[in-house]
Image (cartoon, rainbow, N blue to C red):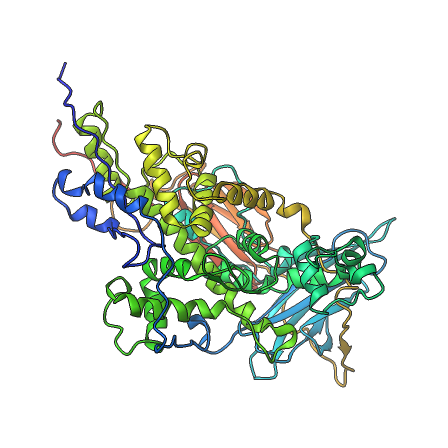
Length: 624
């Protein structure tokens, strides 16, 4: 038996994020640098130095001198270009006395632009003067519509088929098909290389902002609505508030119920946009806002000034600026004259100027606005929250990827394999998908110093780095309770989902009299076919020949309306008849289990050919 070599215990830890240069020890070690090191020994930071850095007591960022000023940024960098307009349709749930659908439009820049909706119900033209509109239907219908802004923006066309089914208890309305379909990348799962294997619903991407609507009783929000006179509870004892003015009474809650519904859902369009653009699951993002502020974008000071819907502070902004060089380059020119140096190389005073300016984006206090809050700015700041969460996901991945422990009983080959995993960007951790989200929320709330130290202590104890073990070693006060409470709220998200109804949206469209016959503007029934062919390219000519077709291959066709059709190839070919489906549907054709897929938009007619080619494996020329 080969003798086992014994080594002393060594550890490395990457510590990024909430530490501020000059007050907290920071070791900035990029994962890619690991691959460039030659040999295991060069990978290591001295354990004593790393531990000292982690255990350093965090200090608030140094305040700028009295003569310095923090530049203001006029808006989020991603919103400096032309605004975009979006429109979508939602159907109510449950039996209805009169069938209807709700149409909505919104702008990526909520600056008070007047938005209207215009289109056709079957062949009848309509105009709705509002961004939300209730359309009552006589029977199953086809709708085409767009949103329009008074600044000249126009949304993409929405084409929807709506089914109205009468029943004993009322009408049931459902959307049979719609041409809108958005693909989603889970940026955090991609960063970790760990994916949801349990098919949980709390990280689902919804295809419409309406699917994020909730109806919750939120006491902090109700208190603010009553205190600021948004809700009139003058007929309630003590104005609907407790003696300390910090809690609503039952009467106050009842008076505030409709406003609570509006306030907790007014950011859903922008949560959806942020989720689509930054890859953060929308239910997690909305839960973050609920937990941090209950949708009241106020500012307060605890350890640091905290702003807006996500209670953002400068330490959190530091994580984003370090993890996202592109974001830094977007904001830097508005603050510094020289942006040729990366954020981590700037002088502490310059870093503080940039952090302060970015944090101010979430500060929505406004002395000239209703209720003292700029709600348009609050909606814009949701996009910043999405970027912050993504940065914390990457922060967690970096810390876990850089913690390497070599126990005395671990062989050299095992340790070398662990280093190779780190160099390749893998996560050296026993954490499950849910654990990694818990780590991310801990990093967001308590900072990465707290998380990094707990991970290091868990590794030293030779225990798996999962939430159960890491949470036992947290020194940051309230971190474990925050994460556990957050996840409980997230798990219950679907229980509180709410679909707006015709009482919530009272505006109805105006039917435009038909002066001349109006033809149906779009063909709604497709006659197209999808031809899928699968072959093994044995001769390497990149085209199918006799003897290369693959029989009995399972092919799955999935539509954006969640229809699924499975067929098997015969002589390498199977044909899907799409007659009756709506043109414009998103179609995905895949070979289950073989990681091959193609996506396209269903045309009105014709044949769509999808070809999956497998290459002949390379065979050895000599026997071993």
